[in-house]
Length: 397
Image (cartoon, rainbow, N blue to C red):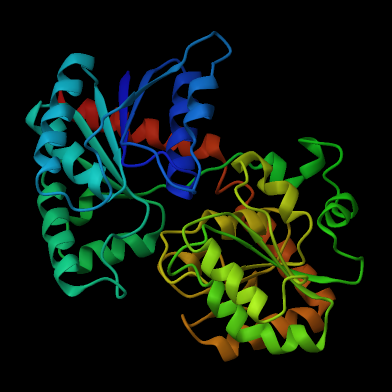
């Protein structure tokens, strides 16, 4: 098959990692794959270097194509131009399958592919573009656009059942269009960080970061951005951290809120207890998970957060806000603690409970690892996607 993936931005992030792993796995299985994306900019980092460096065992590559007018924000003048550019790319590359990712690429890419009569058009919902924290008029535009785009594809893939429910509730698409394909990842490194690098032991990484053996480390892996909940952690735990200097926060990631958050940390006099790593390559995430006691993900909107799955694969219990698909992996009293978004009192209570119950938190992490080990394998995801493509192509003949 000839498979074209279209994604809005190739920054470091969960949906982008999903897309790149899909491309790599499909090339390894003998398919011709191209990846189309918009301009990459900002402090979130880029996955382009990985895409460009990739080679299959027989030497095949992912053809990467940047299209200049594919932007994340609504752009009334650039969006029509982008749609025309995508049609030209599709016409020249002649894919059997066009698989779009993220809202903007999904709307423009599906329309372009449908107009070019591609026999298999698929879209993945990594997270809904409409949500309670967006302006009503924007939500209305997104829902209208998604309803229209759903008519321009054969299948809509969701990384969690919560996405399917939300989209159907918004009258987007038909039930028979939807498929659940959990977002795969390279799990070996999370199960055993030392399999990637022998120095990535808990003791070595904690020493490198300045943690003592007695420190209790609550880790967060997320862009320093709005709605990711870093401020909520400071609101919930600042007083306890001042009383007990052994309580530490480890923030892995970078983003537009870095300076604002750093200023607040300094004002609270917690600069010795909040350790920030800055931008980290995705393949180094297992290293930092090895240093943590608990993975905390107080994000206000997600699809099914890869960070939560990564923490569970690493054997860590998870504290997370109950949004979108998070509850499908973070299950209270089974793999962690699920909290209503913005409930800082419960966020604090959950963190202190984890601190006081080391045996129980170990059991939660062990349960989470066993639940996620096979379900979130990249190979499982790639095989499932290929079966969907083949079924659509078989029915279109």
